[in-house]
Image (tube, one colour):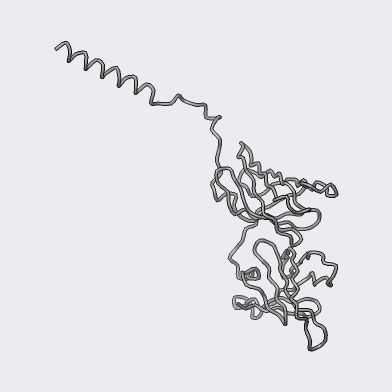
Length: 246
């Protein structure tokens, strides 16, 4: 009987000790770090960068790590970095790879919902470049049929095609016209960034010394009226036309 009492007492003491150690001590709620939902920061951001449009696409945001790419003057560079959620906003750091003379580091301060912010870009390894400041806003892509200009297939023309991508980049492929009936054998590709204002598209192309600068203004063309109006393509001031088509 005495042995049975000792066993019961030991078991009770063991349970009491386990209970007292299994519950962690209460913590101050201010010490808990907020976490932005994984899809809250992904998307396309744009802003004015030294007088020209820049587009930053974030396609991965998880566990305080970010990855994506930026497009400026037709140059696309991968970026990766981190983000930190604070009480009144989101601090973002993005680094370009560093193997191009125009690579740099972005430090960006977004508001709490990640919809807009401001930042600066510092060159990584080029003393001839200077720090740039800029503002960013998140681009909201709608399903409006008038915005079909930035579908994933190019608009085709005579010995040429042009693409206006959702990430803000533009790509022009063409064969140089030698005379009225002869075109060059080598395809020329020019890259840039584009911005739409109403029915006009403005493109800033990369500079190439060995070719003429392409048109920078394109007018969006339609057929039909009201609810029956549909996109047909774009046209330059000198009547070069690019048509919608797969």
